[in-house]
Image (cartoon, rainbow, N blue to C red; front, side):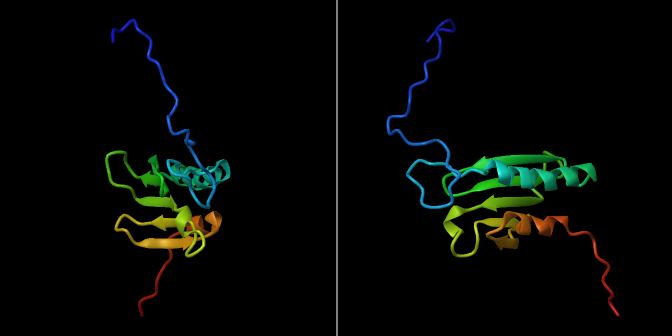
Length: 129
């Protein structure tokens, strides 16, 4: 192939869809993704944390099993938090979860706004008397 030849994109042979925002059963070859409303809720929290200087970067990963929004303090570090959408767990434990860097699930549930509330909690003073 020379540089003057155009690149030809061919449709998939299996005819499967590229994305799926549904939380139910998946067809083979579909990708789990965040919907516009879900991304708006996540970006609202992200924007507040960026304005305070706590977070600086993010990454989106979408696979067949789950969609992950990772939050970073710096782009070269490991993620501070991962916001995951796993439709397979929607009926059991809830499709959404917030995971810490150590793998500890901070909050899980069916309502994204409620799950994201764990990230908005401020620092609390603890009395150790």
